[in-house]
Length: 245
Image (cartoon, rainbow, N blue to C red; front, side, top):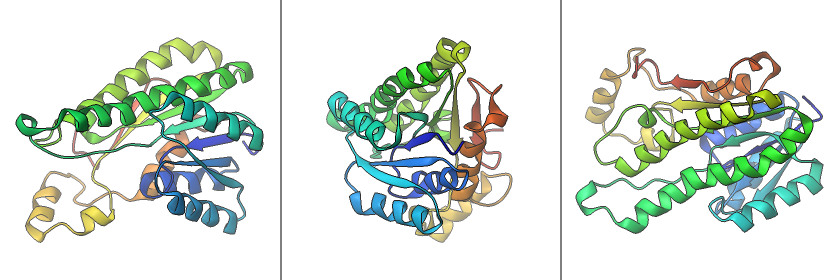
């Protein structure tokens, strides 16, 4: 896989950074996408390069069609068109529906759903020419179950599953697979700051009795983009400790 380029959107931290590092360790040349956190993306690049990998950062608003085209053009000039795409960029704002601002709802759909569509569309032409490609949508456990106060986010993550399954049917015959991962509650700064009672309530919902780790999500994505997963197409993989079992 060392001659292939992977684009990971939202690679400035969290799942995106962990995934970029894991893919680089597998020999891919990694384009680290970012929107506002350029410093975080450059830190991801540094971590990859320090480990002997090949990476560069590329800024774009994935909800903007021209931005996406420009990003793909720059990546192609850098090392060739991405044949692996991890649609990880996303935004969220919690709130009860009755008072939820329309502008926030629209923005969540624009980034989480439209952004994944635009990036997938931009990547597919190069993948079809190569007769090989891997697309992974980073959905969420909330794409599989709802949660009070997160209607907009849940709707966007569920939409990604429909996009995954449709693209899998459209392009599976071209050597391109499209799959989705649905991470549950993962060790992050946000979960680390939860009050003790909230943490206990959360743990009671997880059969394994613990939070997931970023590297566990990255490892699952690494499998889905590998040659070993060439017959895995249209799959939705929950990485949630059994929450949705």
